[in-house]
Image 1 (cartoon, one colour):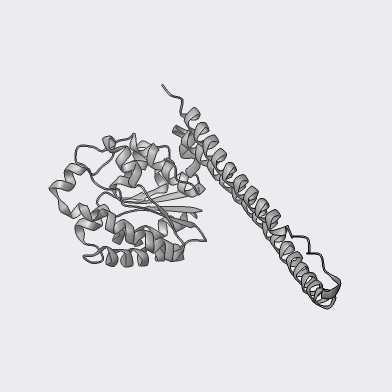
Image 2 (image 1 turned 90 degrees about the vertical axis):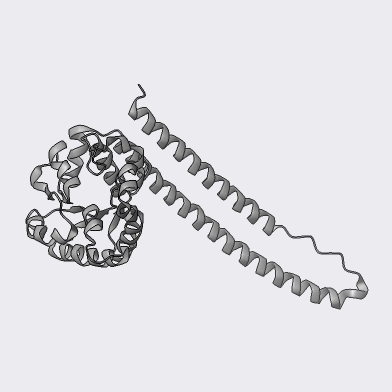
Length: 290
């Protein structure tokens, strides 16, 4: 059996090496460009008959050299700025990659302890976090069959917990019930109002909006209403970008762990929740590699 920590460590090492090579190549290229740009040809010898012309040419040459020196100084400053910027970028990416690699190794109580200070709200899929994980049930504000129209009813309870993060996950019931309207755009506008009301009631908590998990392919073939999930998610992502909320794309884990859906094609087995929890933490850490 492959050790999950080896996989995570290998991923982090490989990505870091690639980024480092790209930065070094970019730096070397700019250095060569600067050196080539700084080369000047020696002035041609002047004859006695061309003295006046030579003086004029010499003055122009001096001006050109001064201009070249100024450009070189500017380019040098720009290169230093580029190197510094790339160094900072590399450091940030390495930090995020290491954090992501660490999250991929988490499981059980170690994983769920990362949700301390957070609240999850949503429908029956979110109820599973209270049933199958170590997140305290009091921090899971969800109800079977709920749509985002139920969110206002949870606001006071969520605010009373004074969370630093709230993870929102509604939508599959909303599509069937045409909450907010019959289009994905209308739904996003409605969801924005409800989530905005939640944000106003909180003391600066970060808002994370989960994409709607799709149903199983078999159920989608039976009920075409569920084929709208990608459209709804696209509008929810736009909404998050507009409002400064974090969007969590769960599309990959839904496909990768599709065998962890129960027979109804909607609800999730206990094993799915660790993958979902890690995906939320990965987005929170700034990297998505599940």
